[in-house]
Image (cartoon, rainbow, N blue to C red):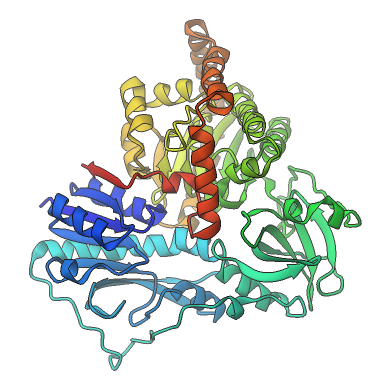
Length: 573
């Protein structure tokens, strides 16, 4: 049975996109409406005539006249009985060991409607956004698919919320206040981490650093440096290290009041950091046989004949400097006596391409945009032209725009089954895009599908991406399961005979491709379009970037590809 389903969303984020991809894969017709106000929701319902309404991420109430006439399912990131807008925030701050997602029916009382389904997960030491993108999204997918299946039968009766029932331990929680997660560097690391993680990536935890009142993001424990609480102990790759009661923390990003989220060193400025020591680490270091606890954005490890290159950039954004460092790390990995290099990206997000926030903060955003895309192109080019190693992209998380194309530069592309990709640029003010996408995307899916993917501005799930050849394999029921299978598959792929055969085939294909059209011609044509986007009279890209960055400073949006839906985006299977 195919249902007409309407999504009402505050933002078309990764969870909503995952739900859309999985429901459309099942044959349902799903339309998406950004729910800016009650009248917009009413108009969408009248227009779409849905059989079912789903709110995968909605921060406002559905109008009573809508939920009384239609079944409206709310996806709530809390255990059964949990109510309130700060569910996951409190779960992190109060150290819950397990949590869950509940799909409930809209009713007069927020989050108190009848329950259609629920799913649980184990908590881990991670930020709110990391938990949301992985554990919460996985649980929401399971629960929502079950709820939709139950709705389809027409026989299921949802269960009223009963706080007297065994196992119902949720409760009504107030909205978390800034004071609930304010920072005092006299606290211990565990308390500070809980507060910072509960507000990351929005709205952040409020604290003072070097006399600057700001919101703090991206906390990591420092294993060896020690100093007075609040003392700045070092800086590395845009992050700063600050002393605490029982140790020290690295903080990757800060945001001043009314400002935008930026690498911590950019917010504090050179004047405040003049006496703070640089504490660089090599961009790629082999740490096989021991766990690397140091804060680093780029890590390299070897297992047998396989090198694993991790690049964990906050929210998947890659600045000019980060692209340059990653290119250096890749070139170093290519000098190692291995047969395969696995590009691991980040554990949270694979990559979202160029760094819109650092571009916005630059003295000349057009020039910084240009520098950033040239650095991305240089990185992609090195991967495409590598013929000494088999290169594999292992996409643990979501990706967008140039981040998707970065993955396609490899010889093989593997994706976690729950990952969502947005292989398009144009929602950012008509940005044309580069990273050799006009070569890499059509060679995988053909010209027709490449045009559909870039012009349609629609997400695609890993399973759908495998079906059309965008990726070679989608697997892994969870992040841990995906990583385990990556190592097994990479070990097999690095077999000497297999690698020799694969590289010989690659050289032949590259030579044939080069005869048809040189790789640099693709790049030059793309950059001509990008030059007009950045420096031309049409300011659409700059206005779209500015709106996106400033909106993210005031709301919970996290990555440009996850906001690339118009006020109304109708998508059907």
